Length: 256
Image 1 (cartoon, rainbow, N blue to C red):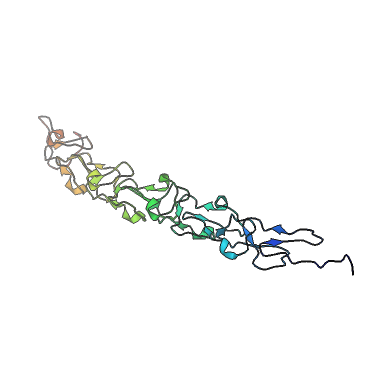
Image 2 (cartoon, helix red, strand yellow):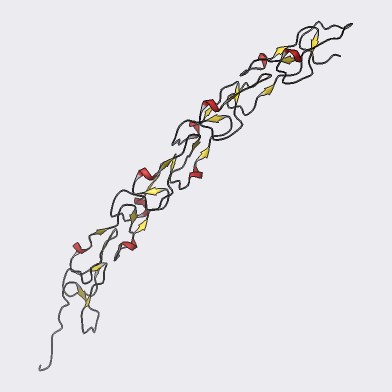
């Protein structure tokens, strides 16, 4: 019929909706490989394209860089890539999901977003440990408790905190060496490991040496003497009975 015209197929890289008079370029992040498209195909997750009017899937070649991921299809730029959060990292390109970001191991932490290497996971210092993965602050490292120390870095268990030996004590947390354990002073002792303080020798006894680990180390005041002092560090604390009195037993605590 005169004046009639056939509808033409939109070429690859373009599309049209119904009643269209022109074909429209596929927008960035999409492509159309065939003719006659009603819509364009989105680039797959993990990739993006800046090309307008793309006619081939190979235009979707841009991967998110290491340390990022892209969970949605049809992206048109690197700005759509999401950084791995603190406490995680990814060394691979083209990640499609947050799960592709690996957690820093227990005993370590990372304060960096978009981290690309396990090397960004910093070890908890000696005297500290962490039990969980994906820690994102140094304060996530826990202090070894009183009476304990750890010389290990990157400790992933409280069991790496070692006990001070009997005869020593530690009043503070977060210690890093066995030398931090303090010997019990003369006149005192500690019988248990992980002690946080030393016990005084009782009245009627004294102890002139350091680092003692048993109550039995406390020496009884001799016959004819007594001491009402606890924690006595010298035999001189044992006082003599006055003339006219006597004591035939040891370890007495009072002149009466």
